[in-house]
Image (cartoon, rainbow, N blue to C red; front, side, top):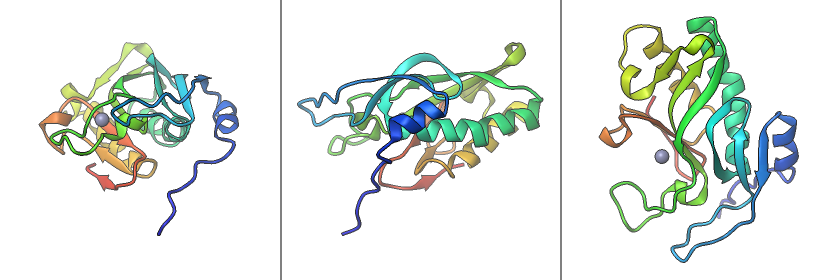
Amino acid sequence: MPQAVEPPRDCFDALARADAVFERRPTTPTREGCRVDEAVMLTRATIPLNRPTLMTCPLAHALAAFEREVVQPAAQRHFGRTVVQLVHYGSYVCKPQTGRNDRLSEHAFGRAIDIGGFELEGKTVVNVRQHWADRGSRGAFLRDVAKGACRHFNIVLTPKTDFAHANHLHLDIGRFTKCDA
Ligand SMILES: [Zn+2]
């Protein structure tokens, strides 16, 4: 049996070293089987979130690396600017996978986050719903970010995937792999 990848023992230390702002939270399993291990209420990985959200420490850590290695370099390339806010539509949500009731979503374990857009310095806003198919720099930025996300997350779902993902990028560190960039 292949072993599930153990998150680093010092995930919380590593997250703090990445300059993240977060609070540790207890694991509180629900009757439906939802639970978030190594839970953190994340305010910022490296880029401030529009609102704090609950997730596993390993997801927060992956988010920090993704922001540093993919999001900010892409923002520099396409706009010559820094991303100052990450707009998300939620991480932990106790719910089944879209379109099926027999399997819990990775959101139910705090191992997924839905990203709706990015705000750059100078009030430039890039929105997945509006700009994914945009022919200018906003669209190119989003599609670049999605491609780069596949190096940091196991599953990347985009507006290419289906209508349920028309307005966000679903990024998760669950067991399965898929790159719809
Ligand atoms: Zn999602």
